Image (cartoon, rainbow, N blue to C red; front, side):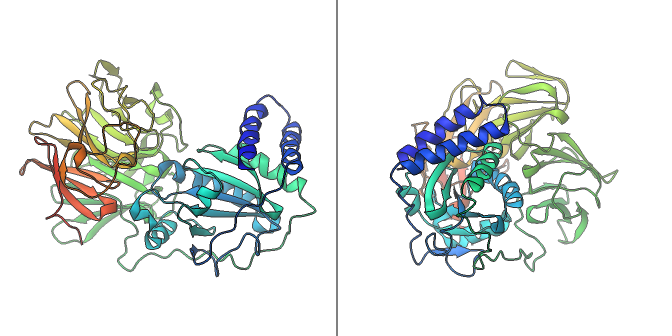
Length: 498
């Protein structure tokens, strides 16, 4: 049955582009549904018992609670940037098609990393990303039974839990909207318009510490700037006293420039000081780079439009008109001419030119943002040519080396630390991952040299010029590990983070 669903879904997405009218597109969707119903009806397997659920008052059953609903199953894992991109797409659909109108969305968490299997961590992710629909920590059970092959994947079940369509990857808002409309209309006599009492989204409350999922910190002299990511704001703290001196952002999610009190951010992450008066922020879910002016007490957008982009080159329009894709980490080159950006969503390293400059045989005009390293393919590929190299969700950056001659990259999905030479852009491995560039499952917790060392989804990295060592946040191992760049070794035994 799933083979036919895959086949018809692929044909549908290809053929819809040839039809101009919405009604014609709806009729094509309904024609596919008829083809599936004429085949042997095979209902989806139900969820196993004794699974842990979130945003529900009791575990849901497809056959008991949802047999007369249209069910959208979102197969995701909370560390996957592409899965995170799907969440706002689904949110738009949930606002348009409510449970009472017949659509129920269920997040089916299917872990990649060992740490993601923990229900405690899944629950934290549900809170962090403000997911209000039901989520089940399913392991890989339904994934395997429905023959899912990649993250993210969306499966649409009709009444009686019959699989109808499957879409892989992100960016399907328009086609999903069309499919849901057509399917609800097709089954209008079979779909219940009643609510599902078991669905009970919980309130999302800030912890008593006053911070909510703080993402990054940066220090300049006695200034400590904290990305209070869950509260969509920045806090300037006196590093000596620990007192909050300035709050930047009103605390509501959004994209708005202006004074510190009225500005809005959306899950800000990486921070980089330019000097005592100016800092840059990777405003991750706004897909933008923001600038904080401490003298004028103003926030402005210096790159990005607020909309996610799929450009893999950049440079054709000024940075404020350039669409970005989940910028996460930031670092300045030694001469402070280029702000390097870990573009987690496009799996690349980009640069925002603060002055006219030339880097790796590429001229960049001031105020423009371009891709500098990474092909855009999600791989762990090293190469002396930066655009042939490939990254896998780069998240953290640090200027490093005895002469600040390279940039370290915490490459999360390949579970490795990589480096980029500043003189020619050559990309090479430091620790973690493995030699096969397509294997993104080479993770673990092991000290050692080069690919013998194993990490698990590192998020950030920093460099100590005093010690001549790098330190990596080995996030899913709950450890801080030190890295010797001369020996390409990592060691974690003395660097547990409790």
